[in-house]
Length: 78
Image (cartoon, rainbow, N blue to C red; front, side):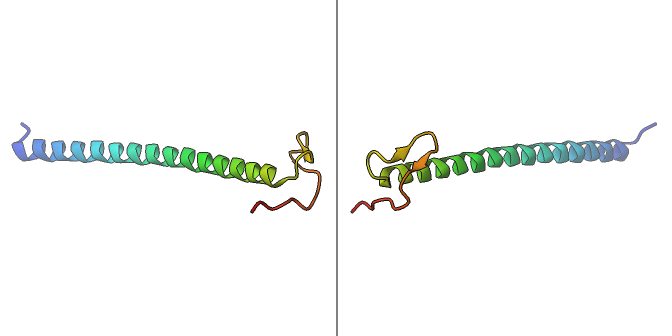
């Protein structure tokens, strides 16, 4: 017959395995969330750079097809 210490040891082992699985799942979810955040931050930075370049271009010289100023020297705003 199974004794009480064996049942307790089995329960502790099962609890440890369940805890380990839950920890791995939580770490994976955090990793995915961090990847999305990095991607969003990079997109925001890129959009901000493009907006800044557009804002510093002299009026009428922005080439929308190329996405850049047709003139190499952009004006600076003071």
